[in-house]
Image (cartoon, rainbow, N blue to C red; front, side, top):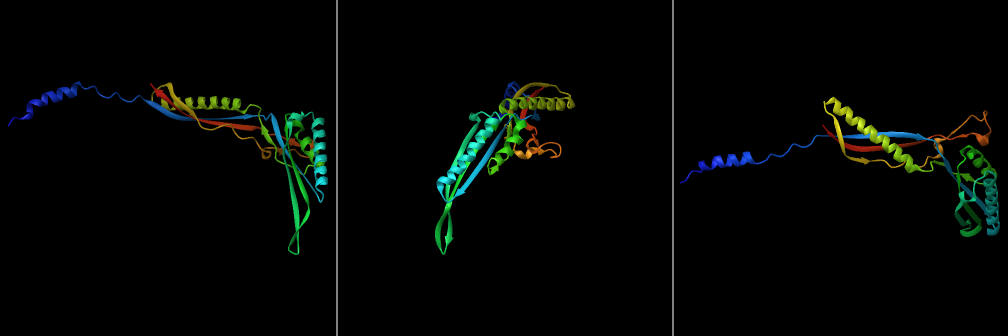
Length: 231
């Protein structure tokens, strides 16, 4: 029986000549965050008008009269008509129950107006005068910037810089240097419009009610994930 000892040198030689797997390139994965506060540039105000009357025509007439007064108010505040939109009109019959029978009581006419205001110093005046004009309710205004995506790009750049500084801090602690970026991804999208809750009232003794609204600042945040080479 032939012994396989003669094959051993060949096996060792083959193993020695096979190239080894190169070590994985060193890298560091980090996250970066940033926050940017910007002043709001416009407000979206939603106005609700309700009119009730046993006669449908009179209910519609009353609601229309309020709309007319609101449009005149917008003109007096130099708000272009293109920035005043009627978003919803609904008519609901209302009934009473009398001895198990349904009887028509009248009609409820509802109108919704959307106003876009750029002169935020007149926001309080718009809301107060709208209520005096017959508007039943004013929804919390939404504070916005004109180009939120541009602001988001700025805060993304700040988050990317934060990620790089985090990578450099880790690399320095380990006696390495940061090289080229391998990839970077973003996490958060632009912040939603800022509601009225972020606004505050000044002391009524200091100013008139129509001027007592003080807008806050919109906070835009971004988060990124990145990986850098280590040298």
